[in-house]
Length: 339
Image (spheres, one colour):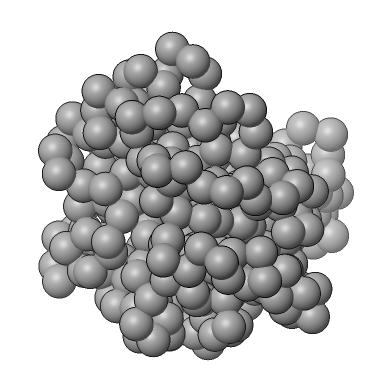
């Protein structure tokens, strides 16, 4: 038996892509598949997104794009991060597209000029007159998920700056803007987190018609009865106030189940159970109502165990959680292809 199994439901991803396309009202969907598709498997999710109507793929680096190109000969692929001089030649040979936010504009390759409208990160302070290789104009929203008023300010800055070049493809919206800020749609939207069925707002994804794509399951490997005053795990962070059954799950922070997830809830045989004690490198403990059999299924993510809830407990975001689910030889990966 594997210590855990990750399932990637490509049918759910396709349905999420269609939900985003409906929200965009005619603008194109560009699927963000950087960081190995946010931990879901870039090649699988890229193919599924394109099948569902996405027009292009977006990654962070040239090596990521080159890896995708091996399996997707004709896909439109945009590298959003900076490319070194040597990488520009590789990108040109692989028929990639590059985002440029500083320095000289490379020739002989499709370019998207990135304008900083308020993110304060990558981006030109003002747009030059675009030369012939420029096919797109872009920017990035800082607060579409938290402060729509500031996002609207960025939208208007982008609209004003790009108005003279409306014949080029303009793209600004991320997942949050695609779902809640119609004015941000322009010609295309670069959507990542919502494509994977995770809420950009940290809420239940079902509120926006999204279905989680990744689920993660393990099992109870051992049970123990703690007497009152006995503890489990490093640092004695959990001390039983009375007789308490605990179950040990063979997954830990080396697998991506983070050390700061103590206190979160997983599902044991379908029932919510609290993670107690310190999460170890290769295991964690759950508090049980009674003894259960070894092999009893435990759902870490999926089937009511929301990544958004884990993120709240850990004080982070779902992006970090799912991209940190580490591949190990002791973990199985299953891809569901249903439409």
